[in-house]
Length: 73
Length: 146
Image 1: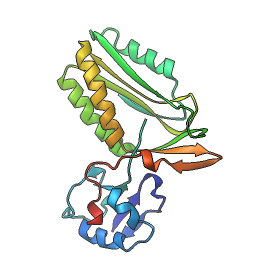
Image 2 (image 1 turned 90 degrees about the vertical axis):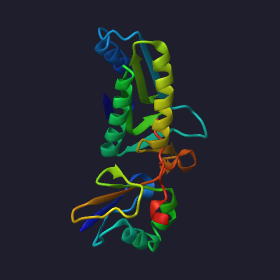
Image 3 (image 1 turned 135 degrees about the vertical axis):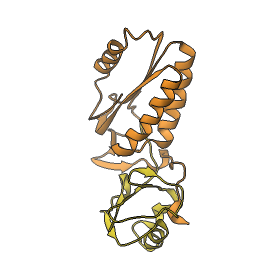
Image 4 (image 1 turned 30 degrees about the horizontal axis):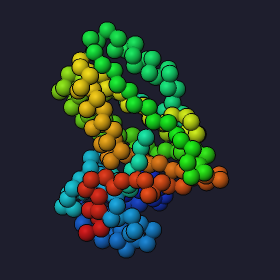
């Protein structure tokens, strides 16, 4: 099971999904009306490390985070 | 040294503490930057969400960069609500010479604005409104839209 969490202003409860890579997650989230409009502007982290490829494999217990645009300070 | 605390920062205490921590470290320069909430667009204040695991990793990389230049970086940021004329952010660089610290604080704050996982909201009429137009997508964003 993979946990997917939506940080900051996205305001969506976490999901638990049976997926094996980020490509599968992209397909699921592109069909989710609450999230799809955020995808273009969100960075993605797996277990708190930012990733730059959809080919990242996921294993049971992994945690994926979506990070929308930031503004600290 | 990174600290995250609820509400407004106690600026005089933090600047004094940092000064005293490094007063015998043989740094010739101490350059702090303090971010204070200004009155604009009818806001009552700002509010912040912070994702600490990635923020600490991001900061740790900057600590290494500072060390490579013989410098030290410190940062404090608020979590939750910070009202007008209170401060939500302090960053400071200590270095042997002034030029390194001045350049480093500029680079650090620019990257902080672009990549630190912190989300800002305007507090207005009892509502908490995401500051979308002032926010920046972290580099590499859009992966899941492909």
